[in-house]
Image 1 (cartoon, helix red, strand yellow):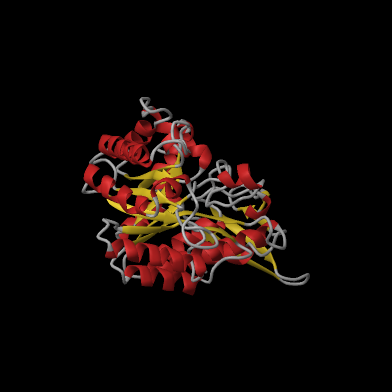
Image 2 (cartoon, one colour):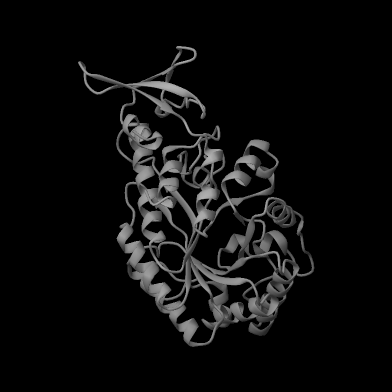
Length: 384
């Protein structure tokens, strides 16, 4: 039985004991949060019933010899994580990030209010640090994001009292300066983020109100002028499978292409829950139809919540593993699917906890040990 297959079997047994061959000491399996370190040979006793036990010896494979990064690069894929400067100061975090990923996205440090809080003020230190980390570790960078509707992420100098032409000039200045600063250092930009409404049409945002729907195409043109070599992306959530919103996203990007807008790629955010998520075959079909427009497609912000999954922790972690594996495996079969970014990689740092309460949505636990979800992603990358 393989290392990962064995892991999947005994994750079903919350009470299974793991006996170390070298020490003979018993420890609780991963489902109770004590993970046996990699690179050890251990004897695993699985209690299948009151009267039957199965014992087998398994050699653990350290993740550094079979990393996500190595598996992704072997198939020409970018695999990445959202990050922030404060987290890069943690050596365990930074070492794991550099080992497992080849693509970085700043979570907030390139958003408008963070780098350009007033008309004549710019703060690049945090973004610069992330770009330097990527360069130092031979990783590519995605810039996130140039235009986003969220009111708290817009600077106070953008007001509804501004004439439309002043808003347009502010957008041009912001994009030209930010993209221009990192010209040649950024592989791709999320140019416009979440412009499609959850219920109908385009989102009723400040930008739509002041400039009409043309603001989307204008932003792409300005970004292209600032760095003609960077890939330009439209990014959105809730449009991963086949549904009304994904139809609206499809119609939007198809129109942009028809209008001659320099759009290269669509990002599907993929914030999922393990108890209710789009069918993998529907996600694949959505990727396929976008690719048929000539666009590249990526998973841009993936995480998988598990707190509402019935059962004990091992059962929830197994459900999470299946979602990660099945969705990514389906996407990898599609032409023009180019990259995967997770919205963080360790449960020690997750936006889900801050906004929705405690959960374990990512690939590594708080102690930087790989969870079943990690092995599910690795299996998908290895076509298993």
